[in-house]
Picture 1 (tube, rainbow over the protein chains, first blue to last red):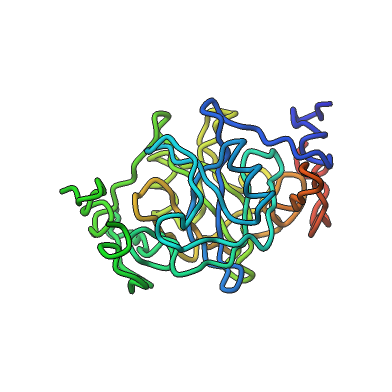
Picture 2 (picture 1 turned 30 degrees about the vertical axis):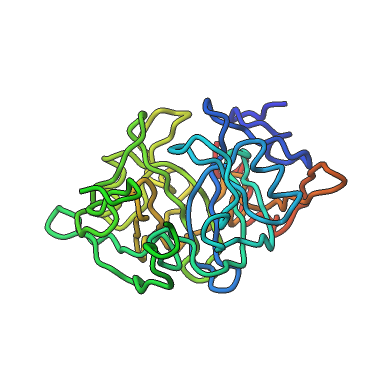
Length: 142
Length: 142
């Protein structure tokens, strides 16, 4: 069922969860801190990661660089408990609100988004913000 | 400069904005409501969209389906004024906190994430939440 504008009504208005995986079999996942609302990280899930996340309530992802499924925190202990999962209009992304143990970023920061992008004379530079480390990555990842 | 674990120190700890575009020349962009913290949408930016967003303070995206650059709200009037832009540790995603005019979703909802994913007996279904329409898409997109 396609609407006038080419949108798929079932996908957008239906109650079936029908994730639209990309060519690599992935959807984008945004994880936010359930308390502060801060974006913690942007990562990817394949079908299996989605299934395990929904079943267990722990966030599972698919690592494109390591080409493997991983449970967030399996090495560091910094697991994410999922408070709520949502999907977007065209079902190619999910948003999870999580309770983050420790810190989300492998650099030791609470969020991966610890640098602000600032425009300056037609150029852009980065400024650190919320960049304190919650843990020492050298000690956590051996 | 690569750290022990294969991470790139300049990319993660430097002050140069060096977005890592994917094979299609895109980075992922998460837009959240600067007031509520809600995730409004997940979309993509190419180099030009990033540049224009930083220069003008309006959110510009690259549409993968329409294969064109677009200023959010150019048809609907529902522009996004950027309060802050951040990038993540490996610089393949940006997070913008925006003041959203009208509503972000083309379906008329404030956010594209108007359905909750609920696990049920090993399956998953969707439940509408925050699904009231702020505008009638049939009237806005003619």
